[in-house]
Image (tube, one colour):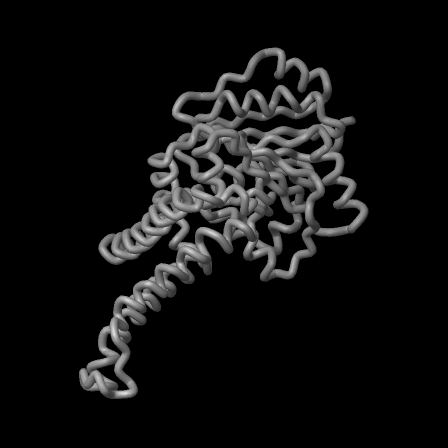
Length: 327
């Protein structure tokens, strides 16, 4: 059944996944009456003629806008401005919904009378490397994501549009603004599948994290600040421990304030806390099973997590210096 909904899909150099997504739309239990693709690929995306014929014969407005050098937020803004319907649905070419996704989302929207429904995405991992990467990053539990969201168009009058000048983080920024505005947005029952982790190498992962955090550090994301504060607190703790015996005990080994090997103990506490939180607590909280972490996988997770966090810190520092020197 065709519904008066506009589906907005930003696309950049991912033609196979985009075609897979479009070819599945005829199988959906609810089909959008308008599909808008904002294509910023290096080469214009090729859409097979049979898809054009299906959408035309079904009375679906199918629009492909070719725009060069667009970031995702800019592409979504164009889609929002072009949409003719009052309900908007959002997908990315790499997020694949079930056939019930749109229908169940619309039912939730109507039943709860909310401003919208958030997307939920599960990150698939079928190789060992992909499972390690998932344990270090997204986790096994589905995450609330902007792709997969279904929103009344009027929500953008309350929260504004997406930031257009950043390559990453614009969706998280908009979701944070929606919370600040007190919008009533429901949780989805259907989960989208993200399947790019299986093709992700460690080098590509670090490049992606550096790029994303370089851009998103300009946005008011609290997690970057937490990482920065943790680093600063760790440095302060080591410095404080290094000077403890000098200041409080004057290097008198008989003093009650003298603590042998305090610097080494401080380093050990910081490293142990990092391992406990980053390698065990966070993965377990995100749905990773303890039996996957033990007996040896936690060592791989520690190593990759350390690389990721170091990359995030470098990206944060790079972004700050770049902002200072380039205005």
